[in-house]
Image 1 (cartoon, rainbow, N blue to C red):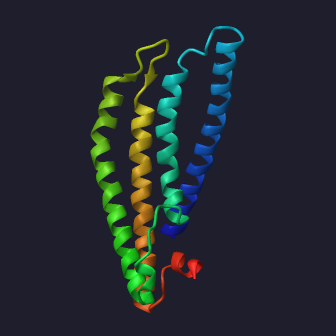
Image 2 (image 1 turned 90 degrees about the vertical axis):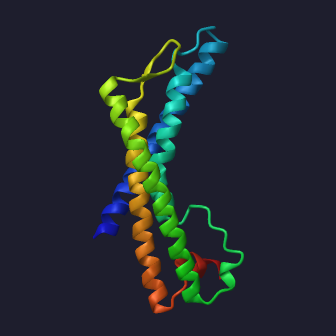
Image 3 (image 1 turned 135 degrees about the horizontal axis):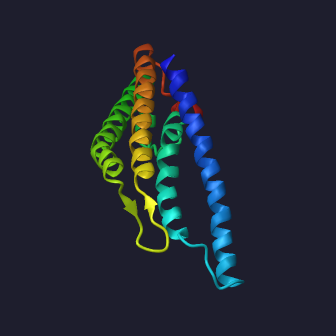
Amino acid sequence: MLTRINDAIARAFLYAAAVLAFLLCFLVVADVLGRVVFNSPVKGTPEIVSTSIVIICFMQAGYAIRSGGMLNVDALVKHLPPAAQSWMAALGALLGAAFFAFLCWGSLEPALHAWASNEFEGEGALRVPAWPTRYALVIGTALATTSYLVTLAGHVRDALTGEPPPSSQASH
């Protein structure tokens, strides 16, 4: 059940990130047209784009992990027996979970501070609140941690049954 909930949230975040990226395209086109045609750019475009890119990246992390889209170098691992491949994949998932858990833990205090202090990004025409970006980082890394833990459980199950990890099965 945790796997289904995690995957549904990851998919919803992926869709939200895609919509945000799609909307950013219109903003950038409007900014370029404003600069070229009207000699008046859309104010705040750099601030909005820079914060939105961070949000988009971390909203997609959980889905990338669960779909097998994260970087995986298996030049040596693919020559190991299937159970050993699964144990190595489990180790990679454990390290990934630890990495994103540390990112989440390290990002929590700045997110709380951004909300409490009403922190803003940007010095130009538009000041963008920092808390949405900071909380997207916390939520995205928490989801990535959970995604890696769900993946870890699957790799341990595969290792105990002697099955290779799913990504190895696809490459053979």
